[in-house]
Image 1 (cartoon, rainbow, N blue to C red):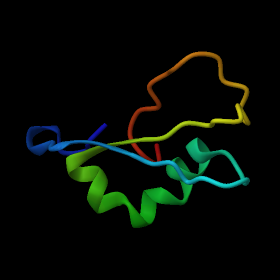
Image 2: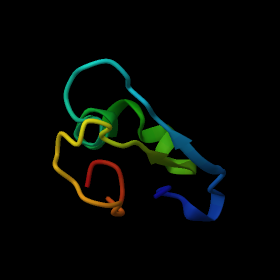
Image 3: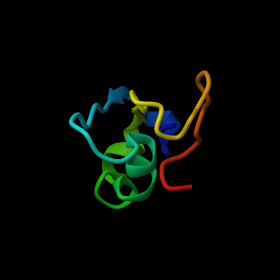
Image 4: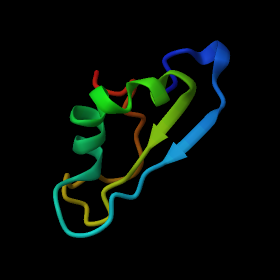
Length: 66
């Protein structure tokens, strides 16, 4: 969720592509630093296409880097 909801613009979807680690973990951990400015006005959204976190269904992760 945008950290400044009063000035929220919309959502940005990230597909990091290629084999590698879980996108959700990357966005929450690494992205918290370099995407923090974007996260002020946008909801940042990603998914794990290979179910690397064994998620079932969709859940709201809360703020980036929580």
